[in-house]
Structures are given as C-alpha cells and as structure tokens.
Amino acid sequence: RGGGGTVVLSDGMCITIVVGRRHGRYAQPIFNSIHQSMIAVLLKAGVNGCECRGISDIAINNKKVLGSSLYLGNKPDYFYYQSSFMVASDIALISKYLRHPPKEPDYRQQRDHEDFCTTLSREGYAIGVQTIADLFCKGITDTVS
Image 1 (tube, helix red, strand yellow):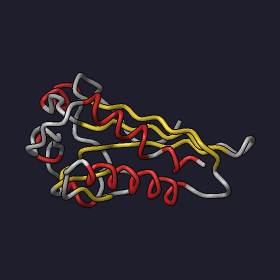
Image 2 (tube, helix red, strand yellow):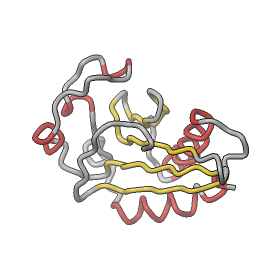
Image 3 (cartoon, one colour):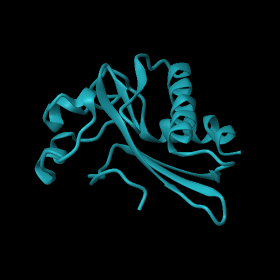
C-alpha cells in the first residue's frame, strides 16, 4: 500500500518503521527528512558516502543500501514509513528470488541486483545490525514529530 516494489528480507538487514504526523507534508519531504536523519546518524558512526538517491533510497558509492516505502494517511493525518537497510545481508538472494524490476531509478542504469545493491559490510564497515538499529532508534526520533 505504501508503494515500492518487492523486497527480499533476510538476516543482516535492519528494518526501520517510523509512524508520525504528516502535518500536511507529502511523500518526498517525509522521505528526505527521515533519510537525512539516517545519513547523519551513519556519518556520526563513521559511515561516509551515503546520499539520498531515486525517490526513496539511500545509496553508498552509487549503490543502493536502503530501500523504503511510505503510506500517507489522511484521517487521521499520519504517515507510515518502512525501510530495509542492508547491513550484512546476502545480496545474491535478491537475484535468486527477484527478476529485474519493471521500473528503476535513473541511477540504477540497468545494473543487475548484485551490481546495484550493496551492504555496509561490502563497503568495508564492520557495524552490526543491532548497532545500526540502536543508532537509528535514537537518531531519527525527532523526525516523527
């Protein structure tokens, strides 16, 4: 219901859910606010090179490390955000279970899943899933108000 495509969930991923008031905001400002908070948290943890890409991704070194979706409610005026952040997951599982998507963000450039996606581990960062989850819980709480 929140858009986005199919997701393969596996060990080594941090799943984030944020529910908050819309305050009249639409999708892109909400994505941007949450993702900028996440990037700031990652930067403080020593993870460099993360940036917002596409409509609702975070990429590191031009490779997707987080995908997300968003549901916008009207009555009540709220949003429901969810994302999967690839910390140390097995990227090969994506190709095993999913075909190339029918729509793709411009920065994907028709790359297959294994060339398009990455993990913190693949990028040389030794940060565990629980650590990322704890950092995100503390670092994005101001976003939902």
